Length: 605
Image (cartoon, rainbow, N blue to C red; front, side, top):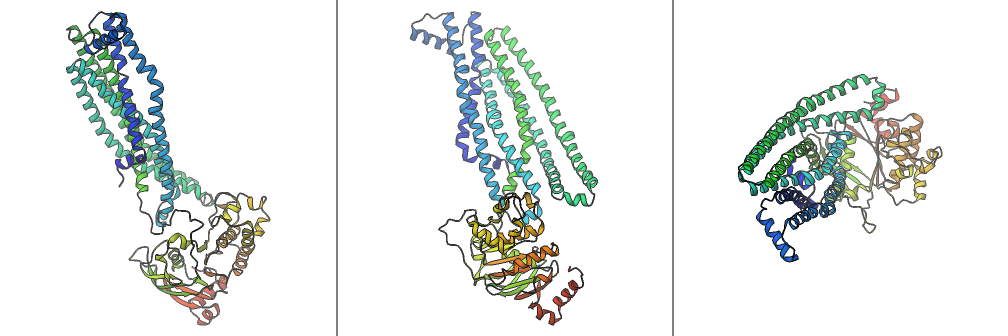
């Protein structure tokens, strides 16, 4: 659970410089009070009233040092000199010792946290992405980073220094007339206490609003991602209605609860503040008429107390801004506190001197059991031996556990029981990053990044030579695709590879996998969504690979697995049959029935 402490620790690497800059800003805010005080003393000089004792002593010391006559001109010159120092001399110093550091800290922290955010994204478990779509995640991160960045200069550079300014005003009024200072202090405590109480309630409303906004943005992201499906089913009006309902709910909360709450808060704050200003004016005027304070003190007291009450508005505005941003900042830290997945790999780029793993490709699954929910097993007592360079096909109905088995092989999840061994070693005892670099997979939907074709081909191995790329493309039959592209290997393929057909992306995926020279290559339903011509091209590419390394093929279309050395039929999470294509057909079992269904054109389900 994220707390206010997490928000403070966001800037932890810069706490020392933050303390310095906040202290400097606070000192400058207090020093500003010297101006109205000096003007009040000048007014006393002009009206030939007595000066405060510290001022008189300072002027006498100046006269003694300079051998000048202590008179009205020297007194005014001394006070003007003080005003010059705290205004003109201070101006350039304040900018560099305060605002430079306030924004420098905010921007550096943003850079640090943005990098940590990427690290978190790369190490979260797969199930987190199953439950949260990209729009929801990106929105939470963007709002959190933005609000942290803009909040720090406002809180560190304005709110805290202004509170010290108010404290300095109280001390100055206390020096002049303690009874007025006491009334001033009590009024501020009352205003701030009630304001904080109301703000706490409004912050809870902001937290609910942030969740609603996240849901709306998440749905908008889904609409953009699935826009072709929306248009195909002509559900534009339905989606608009749903989003209108979400936006109306947000509006009611933000306008009738949150905004109205801030308006009510501001209404009574302004009323009380103006009443307090009037009371201080009356008390100061009475004290002056009774001769308790001088005319200069009257002007100083009323001026600085008005300044203090005037600071209440920006203080309240800054507190309101912080309250509005607080929920999104907390939700950012809740994201950052998500536990790292057991499948997280090292984020350190391997050195050239690091010794990579090398396997023969022998795999053994020994009594492997697994379930996403412990009470609902997906795989039960799976035992299977795959020899080096052997081609093994996994077939079965949807939900039989084929893809889950691959996820276990890649260590996205750990078996509930049993072992997966590679060359006799339990894969759980291996460095997950170095282990995965010896595997490669071609998914049903090949992920393509927005960049050139060459960038995508060398994604797994940036050190691959152009000759190696060309050879991999020849084997995967990508060279046929490249000939048709306007800029060959340097053609930009667009986000998610929208400029490539499904078959072209599949062949790109095969070539990309071959370039890392894996010991184990997996085809995860690589042809299930392709037309016959594309499927034939992929099959030819796969055929040239078979026997060169351990290959695992997951397939719905049984035509792609006939040449496999071993076909494993899964049924409800268990191995039902094992054999070659011919053996399983003679066996007259599940595989024979599935083959017959496909041969007659019926779908495998």
